[in-house]
Image (cartoon, rainbow, N blue to C red; front, side, top):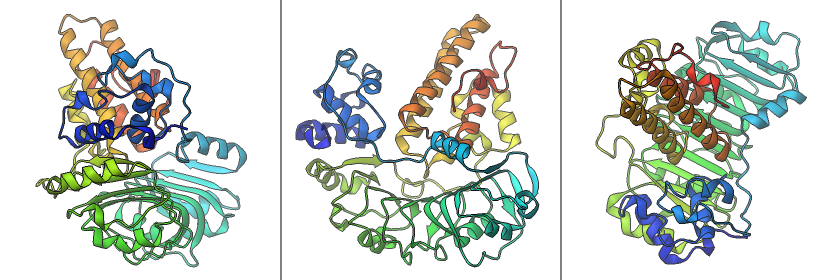
Amino acid sequence: MTTIRDVRPEIRRRYYQASWGAGPEQGRYQGATLDEYVALKRIEFPQATPESAVRTAAADGRPDLAKATTKATFPLPLPDLNEDDMEALSDKHESIFVQKSGALDLDKTIGKKRPRILTCYRNALSGWKALARGDRWLQLHFVQCKTSEKAALAPVLPVGMLRVEMCDDATASLLVASVEATELSVAHERPLDLTAAPARRLQTLAVSADPLSGVRGLKARKLRVLMLGSIASFDEVVELVAANAATLEVLELSVEAPFGPERLPPLPRLRRLGIPSFEALREPWLDFAVDRATFGVRFGGLSSAAAGQPADPGKSAASGQGGTKGRASARKRGGAAAEVRLESWEGHVAPERIAASRALLERAAKELAALGAKATAAQQKKVLQRCVEGLNELDAAEGHFIQTLEAENLSEAIDALAAGTKLKQRVDVADAWRDW
């Protein structure tokens, strides 16, 4: 069973130096054997297999590995409840999916049904008490919803997974305080306080807000996955990390104030660690990463405040935030993939997934520009098709991370590319090829 432990120390150091930004990007995998290359690739892409990894070898500066084979086996990736899993659950259990935007009374929608899965998309919600009538929910999923109700439900609802994506403050706060979930995933662009969150059942906690607070008092003791951003300092989470040190398998933190590796307790089951790149502490963290061969370390970019940039929760749709005005302006300019920078993914989508998605969009933009004004519609269509199919491959290799909000952002980005082409259809262009 090949793991990061089997990668030679000098190869690990070269990889970590390059991923930090302290070495040439193209030299990240220099000198690695195929087995070492795959093990390192799985730090960034946990779902990667030898077959999928060799397809990217040439782009990573290792064309010599493109036709290599291996008999080595690699550990199964960490369990990830993705969209395919949810479709399988939907086939077995009654579910309600509301995609039509507008006012939605949950009391009338649920009625006398006994659903196990509920998904609401862009709704103004009321009648929250109806949630208590269902059997134990397998999943509650709310995307860009809002509500005028503020009182938390009592008693709290036991739920398998709760996902809250880009909802208003009232919806996010109500759900966080009302649901006792095994897996809690929240992507919020504004301040969010977790003080009232029931945490006894939690095994996965993945929350991003701007900023995130109330972490100190959480009573979770069974966490396997902890991903938080952005928090002011490691002091906010030190007790939570220590209380779950024996069970944590994934720890990813977006922290404003620098902290050194000595602050971490022993984490015997850890398989992946992600932290910002604190330049003043580069050498201690690089040494730590090389010495800890039982898990991989991902060094992310600085948070906006740490990088000296203003944290602006009101980003436009041209930055991947949604909204018709920004979307229209991006399409009007045409061909500018950089206008959709996927910033709304930051904090709840892994940095390498954002970078890989952005790279595919930027490559398509460059190819379209290189074709020039004399390009035929067929040539331009081929470029867009390659881009979408590349996103399909990335999504499949990464456990299907492209979900509702991400799919909408990517579709907008492809449409922005198509706006400056000769294609007859320049809206919802990705639908012809996308698997997400």
